[in-house]
Image 1 (cartoon, one colour):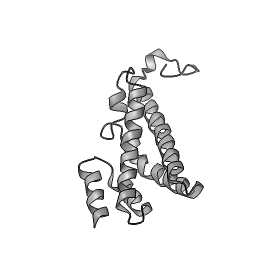
Image 2 (cartoon, rainbow, N blue to C red):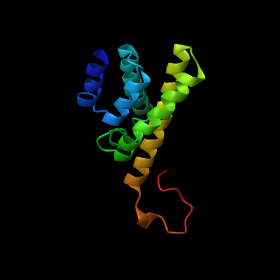
Image 3 (cartoon, rainbow, N blue to C red):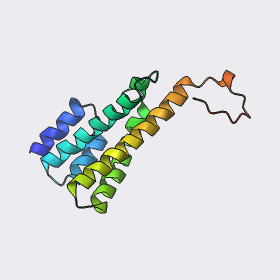
Image 4 (tube, rainbow, N blue to C red):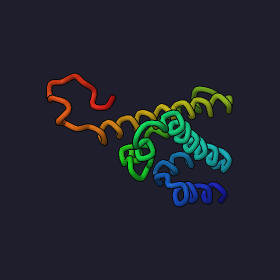
Length: 136
């Protein structure tokens, strides 16, 4: 019962995709505290990436699940991989949380970077045969 309430809050109030919450719920094995912690790690990882890159123009857009649809759409599959691997690698709860946090931060940084590259890419600045990166 408590896991259903937390899952609903993560979806409706937290803005997480339903599929991602469903995966977190399944991998928390009915443990409401574990589900709550998984949700918290997602928000903490996004906030950490934002703080580390707040000087970057449009970083807020890049880390927004509403704006960055690629990130929103791929979150569930990446969560499945991250959570499954974390729980398989170690039984130590601190190690599991650390692995999840680092993996989520890497994921959000990659998604944010891709979004910013697409947002700021102007084809006029880069010839077709150029090896120059789209975003510097």
